[in-house]
Amino acid sequence: MIDVLVVGAGPTGLTLACELARRGVSFRSIDAAPGPQPGSRGKGVQPRSLEVFENLGIVERVLAHGQLAMPIRSIDPEGNVTLGGAEPEALKNRPDIPYTTSLLTPEWRVEEALRMHLGELGFAVEFGTELVDFEQSEDGVTAVVERAGAKQTLRARWLVGCDGGHSVVRKKSGIAFVGETREEVRMIVADVEVDALERDAWHMWRHGEGLVNLCPLPSTNLFSYQATIAPGQDPALTRANMQAILGRRARRADLRLHEPVWSSLWRANIRIVDRYRERRVFLAGDAAHIHSPAGGQGMNTGIQDAHNLGWKLAAVVKGASPKLLDSYESERRLVALHVLSLSNARLRQVLDDKTMPTRRDASTIQLDVGYRGSTLARDDRDPGAELRAGDRAPDATGLMTIDGERRLFELTRGAGFTLLDFGRTAAKTVSRVDLQACRRVERPTAPGEIADTAGHLARAYGATESTLVLLRPDGYIGLISDAGDVGAIDDYLGALG
Image 1 (spheres, rainbow, N blue to C red):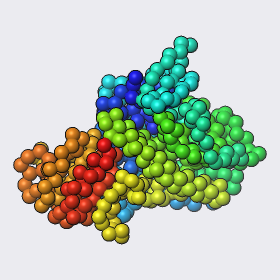
Image 2: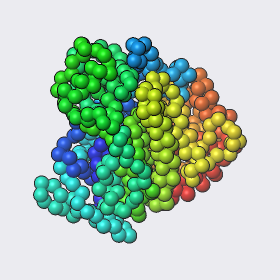
Image 3: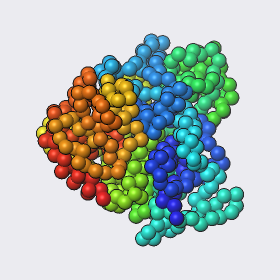
Image 4: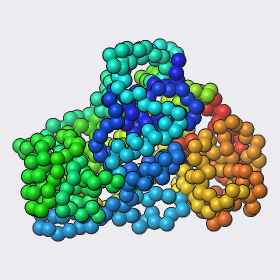
């Protein structure tokens, strides 16, 4: 019996597979498609997801094929140009935030980076392998999969459906997908070469009949084409129709489209599951929530679903209480509800005003995602404190170790729990295999000791000389004790089993 069967190998399933692989969990990753999927699809990677990729060890690979803070050029019907897309001023030069703006890169590039990393960890996706059926028992899931006409039965302790909006796992689990499909709200999306168009910005044209956008896709010679299609307008996915729409709305006769290499007609399907789990079956990514692409949230939310669930599954495999898995739904469903609200508001702006926001701000970059109020969030701070348990763990620069200067995120990469000990405590009395301790000292002389030379770490965490902070494996704060209560750390970790 394997520990986990992961169904679906998009960004969500691949993130989960990488997380399980590096934490020593046995699993299989299957996908019904014959191979990797084409198309730019979700092309925006938000700063919080870049932090996840840094934790996984692939952020440099992802950044190499994208562009941060792609300029946005919006042109109204009178030809007036509005420029946007700049890095938010409030986030510049922040030692607690390593990535301050979204990265533009085709989704297939993200999947490529994750698959390469999975291969480096000794695993591979089993493409062309379809989940046919499954049954649950008290101790596991019996699944039937089919490959090249041959069926195989396998056993897993858990099954995770990362298989998209049409999820077979969700349907066979009997989990309701609540929401609506708006057939009248449609958009042509395609990847296409374009003659005579500069690749220095994302181009958006507003017109009375709707929007048309052309966004250069870094590391390719293609543009992402998007055009809203109102009732009565031609939805044909032909070069001729896309060219005609572009000509009318952009009023640029010189722009010539080549044959699209990938295209799709998007319909507004806005739904969320009524629960993320049915006994030993979990859902993540588009299998659990789908919404408008406005705001660039979908792929990122799925990646973070997987990052949240992965360490919890690994902890339970290694002996933690199975009750830990209950926190997955309670933490992530609230995030998805917020994302649906945000993307719906952005979609209304597109439909009503025939415009798309060009300013990047904190509402979309997901650095404010957190789990205050979770059963895994404990602290002894005043309710009005700026940083509380459940919040995203801030980064910090200028940390001196015996190996040289490091950032906090470098020290926590791939770790289990990390205890930040700001001094004057006996935190070393906490003894856990999955716990690494980083103790603040004046001058580091041993592994685990750090000198906060610029004070960035203490400021980021609002720490006193007795503060203890416990960081979760997914980069969120589990516990803060300004009283320096070592027993609280023991109690917290002990409750996990």
